[in-house]
Length: 337
Image (cartoon, rainbow, N blue to C red):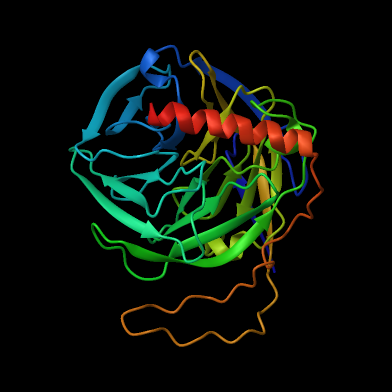
C-alpha cells in the first residue's frame, strides 16, 4: 500500500523520496536578544512558540511571523537544560529538559507548561544510563518520544514505559534506534561529517501524519499516516537540506505542512520550507511476539535495536568527532555557569 502525504500544497516544487530543492524562504531574523539560543520551536498556524537552550525558568516566547515577541509564557519550574519544544492539541507546551552533554544526569525531565503559566515537572530515567537528547516527538495521542544525539552515528529512541507521573521519576523504555548517513550540506558549528548525522531537534505535524527529525544541516521527514511514530521511523525518509544555518536545532511543522527551521545565534534567520511530498510504503508485518504488559502498563510494540536503521551509516573521522566533543563540553560548561 502506498500513502502520499503532501506538505504545504501551494504549488511549490515537490520532493519525492530523495533530496531535492523544495521551496525555501527566509522569513525574518531573531534580533530580540532574548532569542539568542533558540533550540526548540512549535507552530499553530498563527504563532511560533520558541524555547531557548538551557534556561533558568520554564519560559516560552510567542512570536508573530515577523519574529516579534508578542507574549512570554513562564512557569515557576527551574529546568536544567531544555533542548526541544512540542505543542499538544490542547495547547499545552512540553519542554524537553533532556540535554546532558556530559552524560552525568541521574534523571532528565519533561515540563508541561499551560498557556496560563502553570508548569509541572515529570522526571524520567533511562534504562541503560545517561543520554543526551535534543529531539522530542509528541504523538497525536500525547505520548512523548525522545531521540538521542550521538556523535558516533546511532540515535536511540525512548518513550515512557507507563503513564507519566509528577514529579516521578517514570522509567523510559528503549524502543528503537536510527542511523543517519553524513551529507555534504554545509552549516553548523562542527564539521559536516559529524554535524549532518547528529539529531538536534524533532517535530510531529499537528495532525500526527508526518514526523520530522533534523540535524545541524538537514531535515528528515517520515510519513505517519496512522499517527504511529515508531512505524514512521521505519520508513524511508525524505531529506530536506537546510544549508548554512549557524547552529540549526529547532524544527516545527505548520498545520498546512510548511516546515519552520530556526537556529541558535543572535540575529539568525527563520527559514520556512514548503512543497515537500512524503510517500509511505506499507511496512512489512513483524514476526516478533509482543510481550504481555506488566500490571499498570500498556502494551508496547517490539522494535529491534537495528530496526530503524533506514539509512546506513558511514564512519566519521576522529578529528571531526573530537571537534564535536570539545564543542559539547564548552556548551555544558556555559550552561552550568
